[in-house]
Image (cartoon, rainbow, N blue to C red; front, side, top):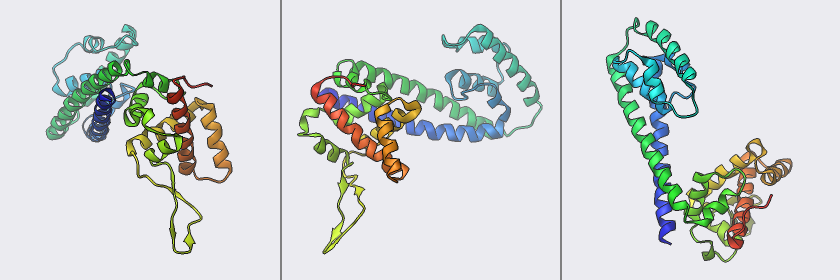
Length: 266
């Protein structure tokens, strides 16, 4: 129980920091468009650690050898040739950019946002490392990862919110805990013909399941869920209703997997 609780603390903190990180990226992009719009041509992922470090040096104006800076921040996935090409492109863009007048206040604001983003990247990496270490001692996470479309972070989030599956009598009770069970709306002699999910359970679990369904349908990773989704769409269900139905279906699969202690069978 303590391990489930610890994992829950980590996954919820990761979710919280990720939310701030997304907002910080939006703010930084708006500033970048004002301060140095041409920079977005250099790196495919402007918010990678390498790109943010290079951008901070650009704003500070303290670097003469860009090839060294880029190579010093590279991961194993990139070659020296790639770094040299990026450095060459950056020099071209910087020559034009230095001639343009820009707001000192906006430049300082962008520099501050870059420091914040780099700090959050480090914090997220540390949280993910702790999550992985804790997950190694929880076989439930590995069982969850056997489901197509569910990676380590998503598996950890689902297990953290579920806790010990033995506390649930059956899959129906688990579905109710997630708030994915349909609510029946009635008053006197009136009974609604359409129903909505109750949403009375764990919103984090619902969100994780919703993401798991979307990841499973992407590139047809989870053929069983994709097939069920298409069936619901043919029945005339709107997109969101069909995805929620798939989340309900997926939760039944999860319950069976955790109860039996056996990985997902394709």
